[in-house]
Amino acid sequence: MPQTFTADAVLLDMDGTLVDSTAVVERLWLEWAQRHDVDADEVLAVVHGRQGHESMAILLPARDPAINAAENAELLAAESADTDGVVAIAGAAELLAATVDAPHALVTSADERLAASRMGAAGLRMPVVRVTAEHVSRSKPDPEGFLRAATLLGVQPSRCVVFEDSETGIAAGLAAGMTVIGVGPRAAGHGAAAVMPDLTSVQISTAGSGIRIALT
Image 1 (tube, rainbow, N blue to C red):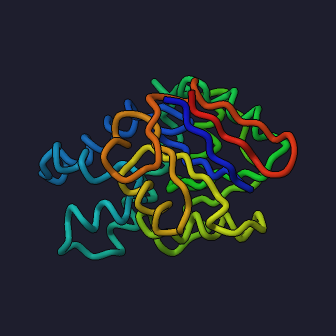
Image 2 (image 1 turned 120 degrees about the vertical axis):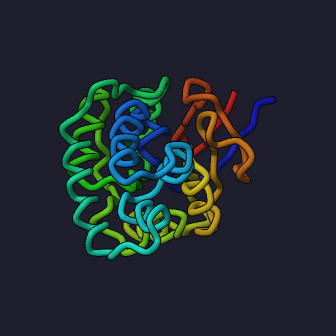
């Protein structure tokens, strides 16, 4: 059944929402799991949508946070260099084209280098306004990143629509008081206002005041 939302800004997650990076994320995290003798299924249940050092803290709670920070830096560098299998989510290029003249931002747990690497590998336009790992002190599911994006755009949080794929990302958007549209199979069952298999059925119009988002 078609649904329509109105907003003053669109906030976009990257991995799993605009870019399919599942192959490289899971490949590198499973290598990490093997090195640390951590259950692979547990790792895959935790890492999506979070910054790496916070995932490590959950998976190895007794470990020194400084070690997590150092390993996360190494992992980010490896992820930035490895774009094998990184492709655009269906409809992502069209969504970005439709938002070019509307207030919008990228809000990702990746750092700036990794975001540029993956968006480039997927052939997608990088939004001018973006909140990456360097800009926040707390990772999703904390709402800090989304709230910072709303501030940068000069928009009330309640007037933002978030596109997210993960449980942690959806929780962050909801905690920020925003409307959340889920994208992909991981988004179901976590409280999003709607869940779409990809972005091909998303129609965005900026005619008149505000942004109209139609899901068909």
